[in-house]
Image (cartoon, rainbow, N blue to C red; front, top):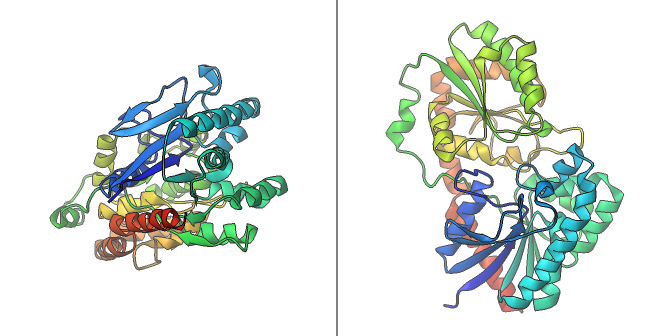
Length: 406
């Protein structure tokens, strides 16, 4: 059988082995590789970083500005970078122009069967350039933020409708992202394909049970993710102050990740007088992250609909926690509801409701039987709905169908 060659256009890709961005996407590439599919990554440079090989994956990185300013991507999304620093509006045209130039050069020199654009706004421009050169089928995969931006901005909405016409297939990661995309473009046929967990397999069942048997000196509440407004971490910190006042046993809150909200979140913990009980780790390696997952008693994703009407497209960290046997608490927003079925696979709370969040967390800390019941249900649910075998096969079916149709 002929190997399928895919060029995946992405906003960012790990810069080194300690870079933990988009682990689920790296996992997808490796899974596709085992199914006779060769994936080449096309992405932007970061501070002058050159093209090369990452974990056996070929990565093409295009330069677009002075290395000092090549920070449009990787640490935060392009959209968030523009929000945070208006200077990058001057860099953006160079990002687009040089991205197109490198796309054309790549297409002229290389052969491939499929163009797969992840985060199509604005990366679809590069995919369209490659398609014009090679006339290959193109698939878009939306993750949420770019659609939300188009929903609230008339110019972006018009541009998104235009680029959608160039796609041969459109996929999204959740029912939420499908809903808002169809609000913008009702005639676009959309397929939901979630992404799986970056954990290779479910842990040993005995290890999972130990979480609810072993008596720990200090309980741990865990959050993992980028520290941006839509994650709602400030509401978790405020709820944690209430938990400290009521729970009366040693407990700490561990916040893993970094981002533009970190300074204000740390300041909030000082203002509330709980800084000694809240640990901010920043970016950490996979091994250290695994240790935090293993020691956590409850995982919380207190996501909100932010000031830009953006929220969680899916919430893959919830799957990471569930597969570790950790009971999860999350907000009833966005694509989170595709993962957390209230009172079955976890508990959903209203966004920004500090009192409700406090009560739910304390209840799970005190009721191990219920916590374990939720954890067991979650693992079985993920095995069925979010298995890598199913996800990879869906992409392969799309690839083969597009290739055969051309």
